[in-house]
Structures are given as structure tokens and as C-alpha cells.
Amino acid sequence: MGKGSGYGKVILFGEHFVVYGLPGIASAVGLSTDAIVKKAGALTVCDERAGTEGYSAAKKEHQRESFERMFDMMNLEEKGFDIWLGGALPVMSGIGASAASSVAIARAVSDELGLGYDDARINSTAYEMEKAFAGNPSGIDNTVATYGGLIWFKKNMAGGANDLEPIKIPRPVEIVMGNSGVVADTKAMVAGVAERRAHEPEKYDALFKAYAALVVKARAALEAGDLCAVGAFMDENHALLQKVGTSGVKLDELVALARANGAFGAKVTGGGGGGCMVALTPGKDLQERVADAMEAKGFRVLRTTIG
Ligand code: PMV
Image 1 (cartoon, protein in one colour):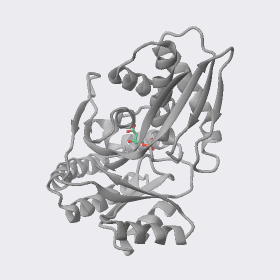
Image 2 (cartoon, helix red, strand yellow):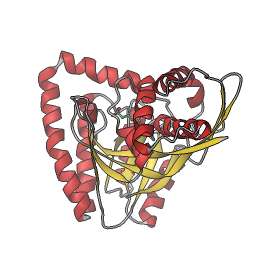
Image 3 (cartoon, protein in one colour):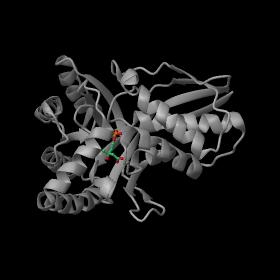
């Protein structure tokens, strides 16, 4: 029997922009997906992860493709395994559930077969698996799912090693992740951005330039512990994502609700079009107030910390 885990994540800055080689900032959330794998005659999956209604069913085909990609990466001819998935990370779009499960499964298969994969090898395997879910992923999700922590990430567009730097902040900070309840298709969202960018190159160049300047300031504010500034930059990042076309009615409603209840800043997180948003809510009291306001409107929330 092999076991493995992968962290869930929240993207604080840069979803979609990271796909094009701009830097992003993401943090592991303190919850993980766990996998247990046993050699078997056929491939079976028992998915006991809690979360968005219909998520696992909607992702079944992507998951099947991700397994094929993993078997290829690992050069496995025997593809029969009983795979169990569970853990405290709820499955919802925007929290890195696919990357967390890819990392957990790759670790568990390596453990079961005694392959001895190190983190770098797990990360590159999970990156291949992520292609099934995200089409052309940046690699930010699987990187955080593998290593955890708060990181500055920049995809190497030439295909070499990605730039990965840990970010240190003065103390962990409370956040609320609000779930729109809509299962999103990251692959379609990433493809949609690519299509719109090809049609409107000038508009997108300007948005990318604005984001590139923003993320550098956001990192400095995070490192300095200037949470008011971090929140304002998150708001700006959200406005850019609205222009990129990856927010949505429910996500905008959640963002407005968070701000109205005192969040320092709020934005879509992850692929968008559904899935989650994130609100910066330093301190337990503020975190509770914002989370309660969302729950009162019927949304599911996750109270967690970054850093
Ligand atoms: O929707 P999620 O949590 O899988 O996040 C996707 C992040 C994107 O930037 C949209 C895609 C990527 O590969 O970086």
C-alpha cells in the first residue's frame, strides 16, 4: 500500500498571467488531499473528497487522462491500481484540487512501487498530469501542491526550470475563500483567454503590462507586512481579471460582499468563471465577519491562512 499527500493552494496574484511567463504569488492552504494506492487487476478510483456537488463527476474524464499521463511519465506498463482519495481539502474549482490530487496520487504510486521519487520528480509528474485539467498549465498549482509555503513563481517559457522563490511574511494572515458553487473548467478558461488575447492583442498587452507592474509591488507589500497595500493590489488584480474575462456574476457578488464587510481586498482566485474568490481578512474577528456574511447568503466558505 502506498500513501501520498498534496497541498491545496490559493493564488493571491497572477492566475492566467502566469501562463504567459509573468510572475505569480501563491500560497499553500493548510489542507491537503491524501491518496492511498494499491496494486490491483484494474484501475479503480474511490473518491471520498468532500466539496462542490458534481465536481468529481465533472472532472472524471480529465482525471482519466491525467492517469494516462502519469503512467507514461512513470513508464508503467501495469496500470491496475485501486486508488483512494480523501483528506481535508474540499474539492472545488480554484483551490488547486486537481493539482493536490495529482501530487498525492503520484507520491502514493511512487511509494507503492518503491520508485523513490523526490519532490522534483513528483512535481514534474504532476505537471504532466495537470495538462489533462488545465490544457496549458503554468505549473504554479502543482508546484505549490508539491512544496507548500508561500511562493513567487515564474514559468520558464523556454522549457527549463521555473523560477521559484519562497516569500517570507512577518506572520501568517487569515483569508476567506468563498465558493461560487459553480464548477469551473480551467482548461476552457485558459483557452478562452488565449483566444481573446489573439483577437485583441493591444488590449491584452496593456493588461499584461499593468499586471507585471502590480505583482512586483504586491510582493514588496507582502514582505513588508503592509496588508492594506496588499489588499488594494488584490482589488486591482481583480479588476484586471474582470477585463480578461475570468470573473463572473457570483464571484463579483462575493468580492463585493467581502469588501463591504471589511476585507482588506478581494479577488477571483484560480481559473475563474466559477470556482472561488479570496478575501484578505487579517485577524480572526474580521475573518469570521466576512465568512459569516458569505454563509448568510448561502455560499460555502473556507477559513484559512496564508504564509
Ligand atoms: O483553477 P485552478 O485552481 O486550477 O487555477 C488555475 C490557474 C491558471 O493560472 C488559470 C492556470 C495555470 O495553469 O496557471
